[in-house]
Image 1 (tube, helix red, strand yellow):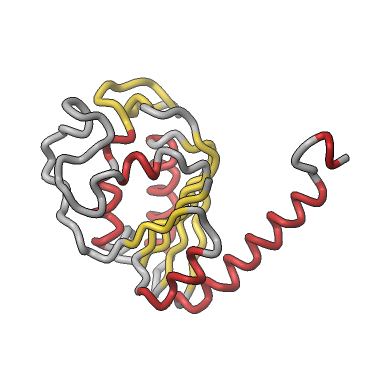
Image 2: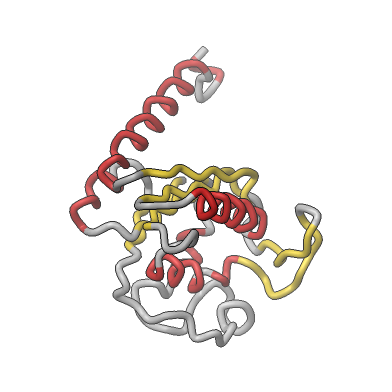
Amino acid sequence: MEVIISDLGGQYDNMLQSNCDVLIRADGAYAPCQGCFGCWTRHPAECFMRDSLQQVCRTVEKADVLTIVTENFYGSYSPNVKTVLDRSIGLSAPLSTWRGKQMHHTLRYGKHSLFRVIVYGDITEQEKETFILMAEKNAVNDGYEKSEVIFLKSPDDLDNVLCEKQRLSDFMKKVLPDSEEDL
């Protein structure tokens, strides 16, 4: 399953929804994380706040591929995307473990495949390096096997990236059949 978290406006919804199973709009129509850690202990993976992000952990935990579409904010996620990520802290358990040669939270839901970040807007070389490092660390902490970061000048270029991704996926289905019956 693929989940996309996006800070783009509604005019991009159809394009994004046609390329994923679930679209989470980082539109700011929800409260920020209160830091109560109830999603870790009292009610695992569920936020006490009754808004559109209450079940965000339950949605993101099913994602084999998590794609984040964000505007560049000084080499980091946009504030609305960061709020969604903060509210999904319940994906991990409060205990720590040694993973990727560093201490990280224990995974509540196991491993996933790909942590993809698509960044649009003006970005310096130093901000690109920061984004790549941050995506790598986020991928390890959240249990993803690999990460990738794609930089775009404008969100209008996103359609080309998503179409290319779909072409590669279709090609792999032809090369590698889904089951032995397809052989």
